[in-house]
Image 1 (spheres, rainbow, N blue to C red):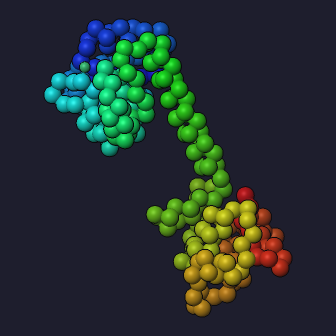
Image 2: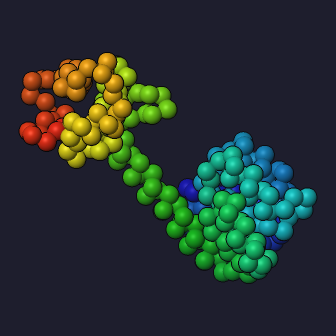
Image 3: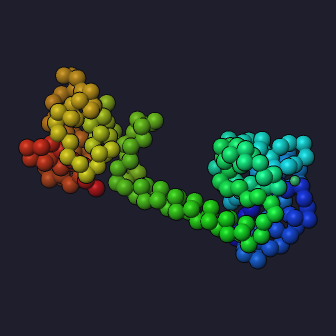
Length: 222
Ligand code: CA
């Protein structure tokens, strides 16, 4: 069941749309008041927001901005205002789609499906990245192998993250030194590579992940 929150002060329209969408396994919770709608969004998790622009007490564009600042919920604007500026501003404020009233409820259903399918695809491709062996978390200054954190020195982290970010490509020794801004104290590249292998390879003498490409440099493969 897809859960949609609607902020629409025209109750008749809201009722009609809710009834129609329920046939497609989409449940709609409508708020006539934008402030109550915003609170509703904080309490309950919804898949999508359908937002009217002409609302009592608070302009829909403002609602749109507030919502997209706080969450990633997809937003479809449903508005009788045909001003192109409204559309541009709404999209700038984070709306995903803009449906000018009056529209056929079938069109709304299709747009909901399209947005959710697109999101689903994006989420799935994220999962694919997560299944990679190595992950670099620059903010945490951490590299994980299959989800397990690897303890690395600063120089090791720099070299390994550089190789991971250029996965599959051969990186020459001089590129590694330049790219990682290694100092003379960091030790020679060969030493750092060996130390990294000791930490990531089950057989460091026959590395699977961090390979030497004879005469050229190193590459990371997964
Ligand atoms: Ca309205």
